[in-house]
Amino acid sequence: MSKAKLVILDCWVSPFCMRVKIALNEKGLEYEAQAEDLFGGKSELLLSSNPIYKKVPVFLHDGKPLCESTIIVNYIDETWSSLPLLPPCSYGRAQARFWADFIDKKVFDACGNIWRSKGEVPVEAKKEFIEILKQLEEALGDKDYFIGTTFGFVDIILIPLTSWFFAVEKIGGLTVEAECPKLSNWMKRCSQRESVAKVVPPPEKVYEFVLMFRKMLGID
Image (cartoon, rainbow, N blue to C red):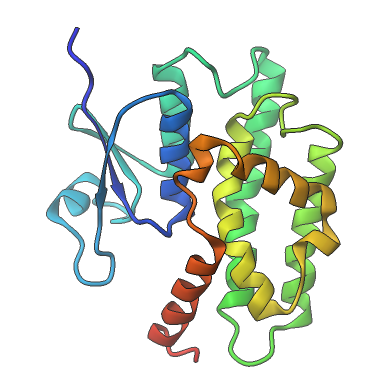
């Protein structure tokens, strides 16, 4: 059986692309990351592979495209089922998918409400961001990872988004560690994993990108 060709259409600063790369790393799979120039002109491969949203990531498995990072991570876990990312019982899997859905619907938008702010960041935006993190911290509890002692699906969905938290802290004038110490410890724990460390960029580099992006958007 020939080895599958795995390609991700990628952007280094996208937390959604990071999810896919972390999942592939956790499975020990070799893949090619093709950087997309999202500002200078998207490739024909991206536009033809994701004609609906025209966004990264796109995951190509032997040329067959898949879009939307959470769906891709699910696909990777089902297709390469050794070292499973989801719990063995159906209830545990449903719970993990609930929190993944919560993260998808809440976290990046709450970050954006802060870093996209013109002038002083609204108190409501900061309060909403911290409330969401506190809900996640409560779900984490005293566990090492979201589904217990093993790094898995929910951790992969959330940890890349935390690379934007430093930018949110700087622009919003808040500190995640002070507000959510257990979640902050979880972030440090995850960042020490090789699968994460070689994918997630330094928060300072993301902050520089956010400042540049704010200028492009005419915010600053």
